Image (tube, rainbow, N blue to C red; front, side, top):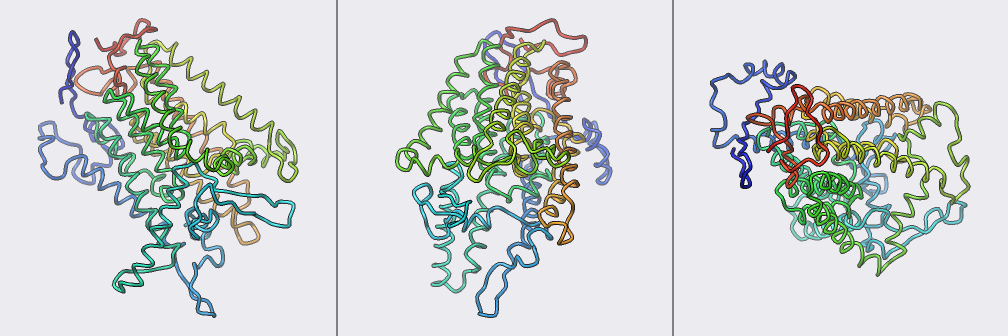
Length: 514
């Protein structure tokens, strides 16, 4: 595929990379269907089973299996009074490892009763020292996403009463099903965007499609919405549309804040490439879009809107944060010691924020001082990975944030599948930790050890990404991205731009595009 070139710039023709010949893991696995593609095989002539359709089909199969993973928690039972309810008896949600936040949040966030998010408040644990006034705890887009799906579930229930042919179930099951349909579409959009970001390497998107993390966690919470926003934002940037990129990142940030982090690498690389104007346009569009979504809610119901920020400030270290793991192994009481009811971990918040600030400075130093301008996806992955490692909360579904970024930064099956598998396996000791030792669960040390292994795996992938930044000839995208060396296929206006801080390339490394 020929890429249009600016005047005076060399035309680069992207040649499709064949993973069965390029990646040893895929090459070995291809033996089951006859081995790697032959040297004289005709490539790209299929009119039906194109790479896009094949990869989307893989994603559909993975998500279908993910549905069956959650299905045991959707079983209904009728009690002695003839009332149907979910069968979570005997801790089914942990024993079957089918737990999803979607089910308890249906009632916990009051969307089952039609309460409008952020306007409606309620009291948790009334009459106890833990009593507190609550509101919708999620960012605005995610909060209204839950409310909208609950209204669809209520409408389906009314339609089923009129049309007996329509299948029906408990309202919470219908709600989960409708939510899962939208989350499926969001993940398919993510897979599609990764494939479009790699026209010469379409099969890299297959790693996203078959990820064990997608199988387990796309339906665990609502993070697939933010992941789709972040990935399509990178796609728009690669198409040299910085305003659209900022808008998509802003929408993703209105569902979960992390897509806004990706604006920092755009600014850093824009400065180094003398393309700062495009980075500033993306930043302005992202912040304006996020504000446009949030401001009406913040003005109408300021207390309810601020619940998300208030909760994240007051909550202690999460189970699988490094702070809690250290506390669990050593008995350390934490930076703040035992917290009084209603008190927040002030010191922990400051430490976590300071560590992330240092990580941002490290990413900035890498962006500006590397011998060759890093690729955008590499910096985005490093920044989000650093945030998760030093943050006080790492919910299981947060690992989905890293999946498309890791594939774009390091499209190698062996390290990525190894990390994703280890990360997904943390779910097992987590569920049995919730079950408790008295109910034949696992002691917490098993869970803490799994978290450490997960974190080491993420650090290992990050270390390889840093290595490819300093040794561009080891970068599979730059070294094998097409017919000869390439610069940054995700870079948009950065791709092939002047490099303000470039030094002489290392022997065997690819020179910047001209």
